[in-house]
Length: 420
Image (cartoon, rainbow, N blue to C red; front, side, top):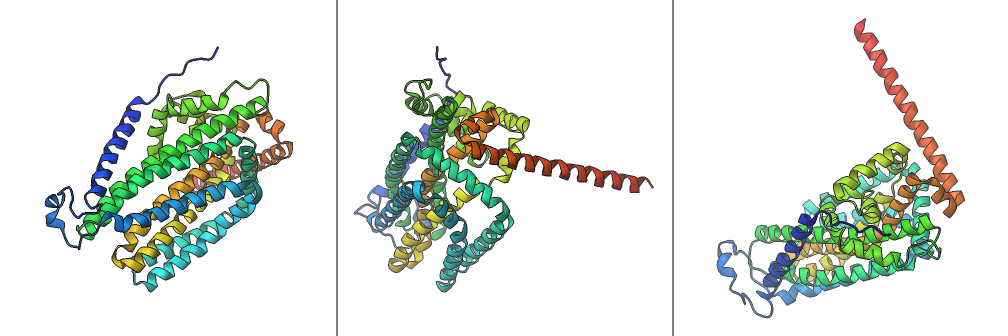
């Protein structure tokens, strides 16, 4: 009989819900205060000391954010649609075109006399180029893993529908968020005050976006692992309504852990699966996943694989396209507020494209966890891929052993010289 799951990290679930309701009210007030009428709610009496600019209206800037939302959604949906037929080409584009695009934006910033942003994007382009050069020998294995992950999710159409649905949910929240952000941009406060408010709103949007992306991750990971364990979505042994149960657990008993873990998004790329399948708390799943990887040596494969970085490049590239389009439009109309609108639009685009990217990331995570739990699961699914993973794991373990031996030898030699 199926064991009933306990609710985990309920405190963080409550914090997230309170944050969502409170931020929704704040965004509504900020947007309404300048909607079709300046200072409609008489908020300026609290900020008159910081008034340095001519006030505008919310509807002046809201359409620019609408363009960002629409473009980000289109990019995310297009990315998902092209995964099945052009996965390899899209991954290569994500890796190589980002450097060029960052360099182009840097030149445009210098041309617009925005030297800070010009230097920032130039440094970003240089770092991106150096990173690609440093990991270029690892890219063939990374592309192989990503191709297999794409194949895995495309064989489960339910997970693709989840990605589309959650992208719409994110877009609805961004409609409200951009309404409030447009009200901030339209305010008469000085640049410092508006930037601080936008930073606070952006942190809130980042957390909300991370929670929604991680919810997709939990649903997709749980479904992919169950299908892998039972040998296919049509297998007789697979539990009835398994996909709906993954969806139910992600939105109920595991949602508090998702909210908690989303505060540490970078640290839980491979830990969310434990939450998804076993319904554990975040802290326990983090410990168990790390012990599983260490005991099997799979952490060497995870460290060698650059899938997360490649998917992040695609996410950043999508955000840059979105931010550039909105920023250029704003520059034409109000050049003093272009970078406010462009930077916040970039964040919107990154989150929307990130919902599409997280589907593949979930499949990559599931591949490694399945291999660590029982390598035969991967062998049964794709024998050639299993052989390639096993060979790479053997090579990485040998490399680690030889490096450890060299370090021990060097340490002993230094000790012997010191004693002499």
